Image (spheres, rainbow, N blue to C red):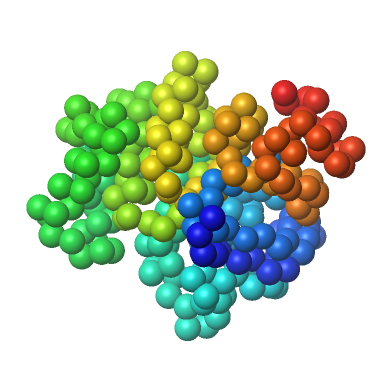
Length: 244
């Protein structure tokens, strides 16, 4: 694995009286593919959203490329260019077609020309198998197609790391496979990825490291082989029995 891109140190997060993250320590290395698993409510998505400051932790440090992004002089927009996010419910712009969805942030945030934005959008739409749909109204796409456009849109920003928040949970079973195949190809290309998922077989197959979260803490982590075949914690064993 390469250098550390993200270091999370002793992160806590509460929503009203509910403590969701309870002292999380977690690193992401360049080229690493990490799957985060655990029951609903274990803090997985909140951890992911803290990494690119969609949620702000109550205490702790998040270091991205050796800079604490929680410091007052941190530029959130610059950070989000480096850390792409793919959401459970796609978050596409419904009033724009497929191509415009992939060009908009390039032009507004990265200040790329229309020509360059289009060239890059076409490259990544081709990569996810959606280049034939560039003029399509995104409202008319299937769930799997929407998620592939969302992945292309994130890639257009050419981030250092991609975060996936349960990218297949809103999809019907027939379209889950097409999104997982795109993610497999991305993993093979060397993209650094952190994936919150309930797809255990997928996590086992593509990850360098699997992290099991329970009640706001990282209870256990290891290689897919260690975690799936020889979990140390009773709670991990119970969870895997239900999901495998």
